[in-house]
Length: 322
Image (cartoon, rainbow, N blue to C red; front, side, top):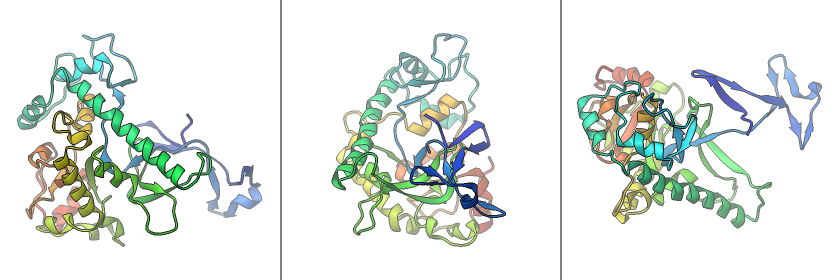
C-alpha cells in the first residue's frame, strides 16, 4: 500500500504528491500554482495516522536479530509468532544488541516477563484492533455512509508527524452537528482497549495554547490542576473507571502484562528517553526517563521529550541529567 509520507532513513521524512484534483480529474498547472511559492497538491498514496494519547497492544513488530536464533523472522512478525515468546521470555539473553537499563528498571521489567508474556500481549491486541474497526464501522452505518463516502476529522496538536512519517491526531468521524461523539482516542480509553500515553505538549489543554511552545510549559507544582482539566482530565477519569471495572486491558483475571511502549523499547534495543511528569502530585521535578514506572498508574504519566526538557528547566522544574 503506497504511502504519501514515509521515512526512508531515520530522521528524514519525505512525501509523495500529485497535482491537485477536482473530483477525480487532475487540475492543470495553471490552476494549481497559486503564486511563486505556493502549489496545490493531492497526496499520492495513503497517510498513516497514529492516534494521540493512547497506546494499544502491538499486533506485530520487528524482532531484534540474534545469531543464536537464526530462524527468527525478518521484518515485522505477529506477536503470536513463537519467536516472540522466546524473545519476551528473556530479552536480555546473550546475542542481542546490548540494551543498558538502570538496575531498578531492569528488575521491574524482569517482573513483567515470562513464557506467556507474548501470548498475553497478542490476546489483548486482537480485541483492541477489532474494537477500533467496530467503532469506525459503527460510525459509517450510523451516518448512513459507505466506505467510499465516509469522512474523518483529524485534529492536530503541536507535533504533526512522528518518527515514522505518520500523522499524529485526535480522530473522529466528520460531523458538523453537535453533540459530536468522543474521538476514537477517548473511546478506546473508555472501553479499556488502550492504555494512556500522554506526551506533552500533544495533550489538552496545551493544544489550545497560542504563541511560543515555552508559554505552554506548566508552572512547577501545578500537576494536579492541569491533570483534572479538559480532555486530559476526562481521559484520566475514563482510564480509572475502566481499570476499576476490569475492562479490556485491565481484565482482573489476566491484565496486559507488558505495556506496548515497553515491548517496543525492548525490541528496538533503545532505552526509554522521555522524561515523566507525575500528574498525581504537585512535585516540582521531572522524573528520569527510566523511572517512569515509579508513577504506578499510566494515566498519571505525562511524558516529556528530551528536547523539551530544557523548557521545563527554565520554567523552574528540576530535571535530572540524562
